[in-house]
Length: 108
Image (tube, rainbow, N blue to C red; front, side, top):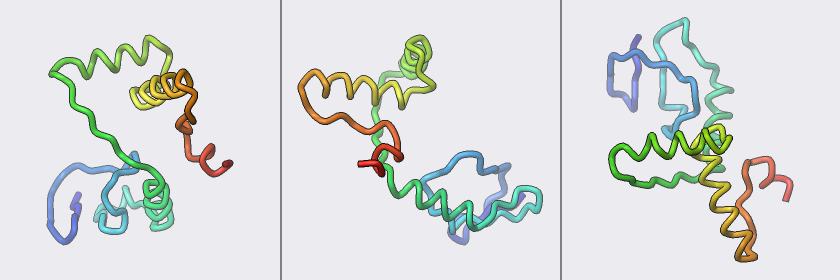
């Protein structure tokens, strides 16, 4: 499969399963089996514009520790776990909590 990123040709096995931070319009898939509609790419891009990324660094090996801890606590992943921890601290301090999703932001 050919994948083009901003005009650069790269040969890789590539499939869009989750929204990515790269501009959706700049991805052109040349494989007919994995075509994604322009409407889907536009909706992914619009969704990602409503979010912000935070990058944290931990010592090697602790990534898995945090993932396992999140699973043990009953969360689907690390992101909901971190948001819940931050919300717990904000609630204790009497401050406004972080919305857990886009729907909550739109409802306000």
